[in-house]
Image: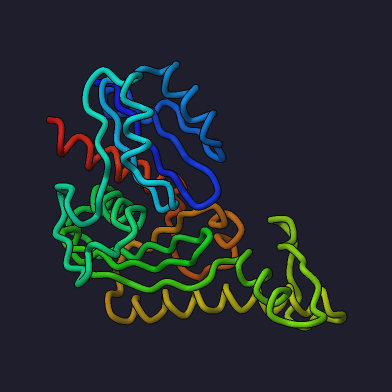
Length: 246
């Protein structure tokens, strides 16, 4: 089967195209018109759409259906069947991307505890127990949100951005811009390492999985063994789609 997975975020969309279970094409940073053009060109057998954006997923389904031969599945964390137990207390408030990432981690690390660190617009840490149960996790502001908040909610702090991937960020900033970078970057890295350490104390042999747009930025700043899997949500969506159309 030729299957398409679509993860629509707050700013752009990511797309994965699978042929007989293998991810053969993926694209990120797609705008809505680019999504439609790509789907119309690929014409998959089935598709699944997950979104955390404000536009209803049903509108995306209607727009994609003419270009999909079979099912266009709107993924809902509360109602869509998944090959994983969802122990979240309020599944109707659970982001589709979080649950899809959990399914992806459970697929890659069966029968193993896993911690997912998703460094995107928000920093999400999610726990999958034993490869069979999604337990929940934590949500905090992501990298760019932290820079923006310092600028927006203060009178004089400038809006700056993260340095290039390879640049070191000194612990002690020597001017206002470098002090902001130190606080945001080193603070967020320390937060992520603290979360990792706490979960490793609970489960020493867990699989630590890093994903999200800012994942490559933080990968060298994290301690211990880390599996960097930027396509984790797409892999999880593929597994969910197969589970529903097989």
